[in-house]
Amino acid sequence: MTADEFRQIVHTIPNNAGIYKYYDAADNLIYVGKAKNIRKRVSSYFNKNNAGYKTHELVLRIARIEFTIVDTEQDAFLLENSLIKQFQPKFNIMLKDDKTYPYIVVKREPFPRVYLTRNKIRDGSEYIGPITSVHRVREILAFIKETIPLRTCKLNLTQNNIAKGKFKVCLEYHLGNCKGPCEGLQTEEDYAASIQQIRQIVKGNLTPLLHQLKAEMQQHAENLEFEKAELVKKKISHLEAYQARSVIVSARLGTLDVFSVLKDGDIAYVNYLMVENGTIINTHTVELETKLDEGEHEVLAFAAINLREEFNSPATEIVVPFPIDYPGDHIKITVPKSGEKKQLLDLSDKNVNYFKEELRKKKILNLEGHEDMDRKKVLYKLQEDLQIPEFPAHIECFDNSNFQGSYPVSAMVCFKDGIPSKKDYRHFNVKTVEGINDFATMKEAVHRRYSRLLREDQPLPQLVVIDGGKGQLSSAMEAVTALGLQHKMLVIGLAKNEEEIFYPNDTESLKLDWNSDSLKLIRRIRDEVHRFGITFHRNKRSKGTFKNELEEIPGIGKNTAQQLLKRFRSVAQIKQLTERELTAEIGASRAAKVWRYFHDSDEERVL
Image (cartoon, rainbow, N blue to C red; front, top):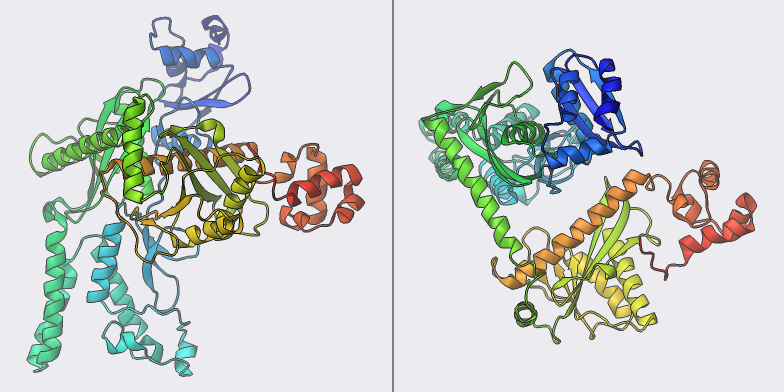
């Protein structure tokens, strides 16, 4: 849109607070912004003195402008954030973070279990977190097990079942790890008190539990129950030791959030310290990509809103290095110059600088542009570390993914001489597996890949990396063995959490040095297959093909696809039909295309 074209419509834009949306010629939403005065803010984009190249590029692509008036600036913040998450416009700031973080779940059931999960579902259970460190989650759960007796069984402990005497106490009861609610030896009220103690522990508020245990120990001592008093004393010692390991700043600080930012060109890094009851209970750093030369103030405000929402922050005070616009009158913005809050801000700044440096070190091993000899040194080291029979000039890596527990797909990336060979990348739409079965999906993808290489007499890789643990590796090896390739290439599994390497039929894993070039290269390959798979998912979602895979079939149009879905309800049902049944519905020619698409399992589709 030119400045002259804009002048013709500027009078239609209101002088109110709200959000504005820019669309390109293809009617794609390319930018969402907020403003106290929409007309004034939008007019600034068409100012001739606007020297920003990226802003100029955005303006050239604007074909249509929409706006929404809201009552308050806070409403504008919330609406802008919601639209950015939903549509991910090309020119808006983007969080470069696809990780899934663990929660501690308190299951919705009588005498609820407490355990770690990465899948947050709407089942009425309580999810505490997310928590960025898996190690910290496991440490908390181990501490809880040693301090607070809880059940770990999956029994249906309704009052009716307990009253009928359906259950008997197990070994956990005799070890003192459970109080036996299955036999009615613990009341629901007493169990609920234990759950409340766990909530306080996760929040770093250990003082109430310490007071309670000390009072309990004193009561046992007065009743001359010295053995019980000694057991409680051990719990107190364990609790105090755990408290000493926690990062306690000052109990006087209470609950607050701390943010710092570091901008480097188009990339920005934001660190978040989540402080509850004076204890740092979460620390997280994210990488953001700016699209329109946004300054540190805009980046920090954007990150703060998203991170506080993601981590369910209850804090009403935010500590930052400079003032930012933040929605909500109840939120206090603090810019400390000295004291404990300034020390926290300095700590956050150290974290964000460390994060940037670690990313730089990790990216050093991107072997693109390096001399051939340098690349070979890394690959020879990899061959030595993994005991690969042949020089690993050709490496392939597989990963499975699904969207919210549905629509499984697989991705494969190929590295030759240590650098990506993108023409050899492949996507696999799952054809033979019903439902979500990660192991079967991996087996299908591996079989399809290497059966095709054999059929076309193409060279095999020396190393195949399976992103997953023993289960995925075993499934991949079933496919490799069926093709008779088990001695022609080395297949390894890479565990997601600890980055351990598994070999077929070995019980012990291999742990390479964290900073070794070999592990860095494997991480690089693993991250690339993640990126490639996620991009595939996003493209499919944007096209709506998850909803109607039939439209991907060459020669099958939208009307035919809708006709089949209306008649048979789902793609899964259509896959089960015979060619004769399909012919009766849509005719012989189209029926043959649909049937071949779902049943020619040896064909590898490249998208």
